[in-house]
Length: 384
Image (cartoon, rainbow, N blue to C red; front, side, top):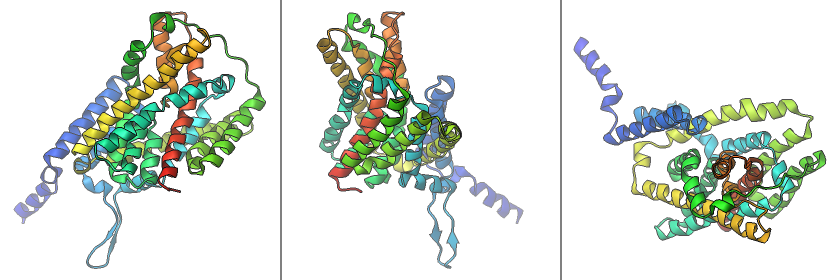
C-alpha cells in the first residue's frame, strides 16, 4: 500500500503530464520574466503574461472548460478559464481603455488637430499586414485580427479577436502585440533614424496653444458621437476611452478618475495579462501559424512606424519646417511609450529639443485610429 501510494503521488506530479513543448513554453515564460524584471520591458504587462504562460504549461487544467461527467456531475472550469471569458466577451479590453482615457491628457491632440493625420498614417501597418496575412493563407477574419498588432495595441487586438471569433489565435496575437509594445524603444528608433535626416530630427516645434476646460470636456463627447455614429461597433472601445477621459476632465468625479486610472486599471491588467498568458499552452502556441503571426506583427509594426514618420516628413515640408517628423512615429498607440521614444530620438539629435507633448497628439490619435480600424474590420465582416 505504501509503494502504491508513493507511486500515485509521483505520477500526480507535473513531470509525468507535460510534453517537451510545455518545457519550451516554460523557457519562453522565463525569458519574458527576465526581460520584464531585469530590463524593465513593460513589466506591468509581461510579468502577468509570463506567469500565466508558466502556469498553463505546468498545469494545463488551470484553463480547463467546465464539463459534465458520465455520472451527470458538473465540474467547474479552471481559474484562468473564467478570466479568459472576460477577454472573449471584450469586458477586460474595454475596461483597459477606460483606464487609459482616465490617465491620458488629450490636450496635445486638441491643440494640434493635424495630429489626427499622423495617427491615421501610422495605421498603415495594419492594412499592409492584413493583405500579407491573406497571402500567407489566413482567412479574412483571422487576417484582420492579426493585422491589428500593427497598432501596438494589445487590448484592441484581444477585442477584435473575440468579436471576429478568432479565439484560437488570441494567445499568439496578444503575446505578439504586447511583446512589440514592450519593445517599442528597440524597434522604432532605427526606422525613425533611417527615414529622417539629422536636420529634421533637430527641428524644434513651437509651444502648443492653451486648451480651455470647455474644449477638454466637449472633446470626448464629440468624438464619441461622431465615431460611434459612423462605426457603432467601436462603441465598447471608443466609448470607454472617452468616458474615462470625461471622468478626468470634468473635474467633478475625482473618485471615479482615481479608481479607473489606478485600482481598477491594475486589477484588470492582472486578469487580462494572466489569462492571455494562459492561452499560450504548447498545443495552441507551438505551430507554424504562430511564427507567421509573430513575423506579420513585426512587419505591421515597422510599417506603422514608417507610415507615421513619412507623413510627418510630408507635413514638415508643407509647414516649411514647423513639424518634426519624429512625432509621426508616435501614431502607433503604445501610450505613452511611443511618445517617449520620439522625445528620446529627438533629444539625441539636440538635447534641448522637447517633443514629448507634441508627440502625445499623434499617440492619442493612434489609440482612436486603431479602434476605428478594428471597427472597420467588424463592419466589413458584418460583426455587431
